[in-house]
Length: 135
Length: 91
Image (tube, rainbow over all chains, first blue to last red; front, side, top):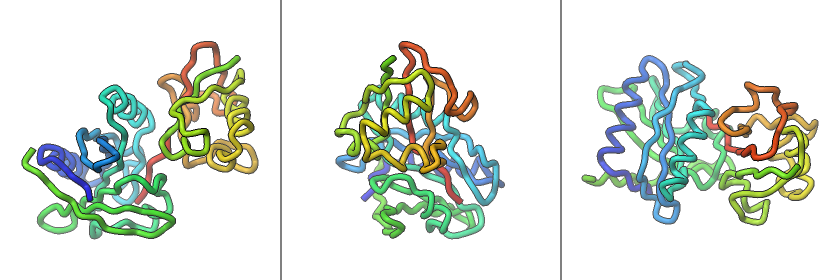
C-alpha cells in the first residue's frame, strides 16, 4: 500500500498537468518500512517527450541527498501518461530499476487525472492500493 | 587512492549491506572495476560485460554525472565522493 498525504498527492498531479503536452516525472521519498510518502521531488523530464520520460540525473542526486539528510529514502518514481491509461507500459516494466520501489502513474487521458501505483518485480506488475490522507 | 562510493538501495545487498563502500582508483573506471572485483555480486549491474558503464545506472563524481564529464576516464582525486544511482526512465 502507498500512503500519500493530500498535499503531496496534489503536488504530483499538479506537476504532471504542468508538464503537458510532455510527460512529467519526479521522485517520492519516505519511510520504506511503512510505504508512507513524506516528500515529493518533481524533476525535469530530460526526454522532453509525450511518450518517454527520463528523470534528470542531477536532480535525482539532489533529491537522494536531501532525502538522506531528512532521514528518508527514495521510495519510488511518478510519471504521467498523456494519452494512455495509468498502467505501466512495456517500456516502464523493462526499465523499472528497483523491485522495492513504488511506481506511480498519473493518466491525463481523460477529463480528470487518474493516479495509480504499482510494484514491478521481475517484469510482473502488481497494482497496490493508494491511500490519500488529509495531511 | 581510496575513495568513498555511495551505493543505491538496490546494490547494497551485493556489497555487504552498507550504504558506502571504499574502493581504490584514480579514474571512475578503475574505481568501478575495483568495486566489482571486491564485490562480485555487483558484476553486470554497474559495468557491462564489455566493461562499459551500464545504461541502467548513473555515476557521479561529487555533483556531476560522469556521462557529462569524461565517462569512465573521469579522474578521481582524494576526497571526491562517488555516488551510484539507478537511471530512472520509462515511457
